[in-house]
Amino acid sequence: MAAFFRPSPKMNIWKSVYFNFKVLPARQAIHLPIHLYGKWNFRFLRGKIKIPLEQVKFGSYRFGFDTAGYFTYCISTISIHKGSKIELGEGVRIGQGVQICLYPNATLRIGNFSSLGDNVKCICYQSIVVGKSTDITWDCQITDFNSHYMLDRKSNSIPNICKPVNIGDYCWICNKTLVMPGTILPNRVVVAASSLLNRNYIKINIQEGSLIGGIPAKLIKTGVYRIYNREDECSLKLYFKKTNECRYKLTSKKSSIEFEE
Image 1 (cartoon, rainbow, N blue to C red):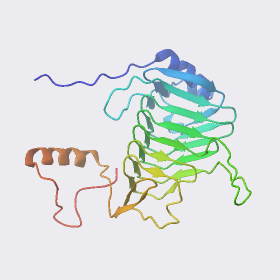
Image 2: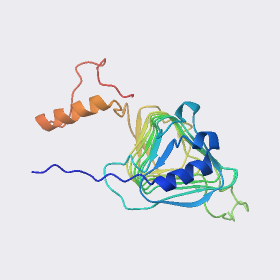
Image 3: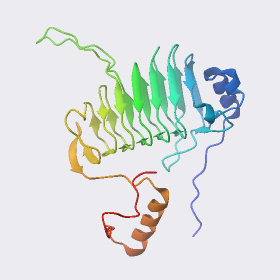
């Protein structure tokens, strides 16, 4: 049987050149550190992107190339309004079909080695922070504001529709999850697929190493950590394929299996 090869998107050279010179200082843009792959639509490019000085080199970032494992034909769209900025850490990955919109004077900060997966929508009115080594997987949506104001007749007041979002380090937000305004997530939390995040989970005592999920998300289990080490992942896949077991049992608490990169 022939091996299955997933087609890789091609680099969009002219869009990459245009994008770099619009969002980076000229002395950085000339090195073309950001490469765009696939189809991209630019609505507004009036804001800026900030990258670490050590990442100002050819092809440090490949937006639209690293995907969740399937091929999407959706067009990626980016809109960066005046005064807004995107701050990228080292090794940030952005998939295909993403929709990124920053309103005037908004800030989107993505930490080292974190990712936005295929078809992720990120709508930032004020502030969205994603910690380091955190994956926002395919078809998720993050927003720090609700689109319209609503009158609460009981209190005769109109609540603020904008609340900053802060997602911790080493988190794993599984597919089709909605991250709503005011979400604050501690480090090393796994969020089950198709969940709704809409509160400060530190205040309600969600600890590191927790699995949460549901609408709205609640605690499911504690002591759960994602395996980030790629070699360990490959070894585990091979083990389960060969043995057909449903669980790998560690021989001791101190194991060679790592849950960090």
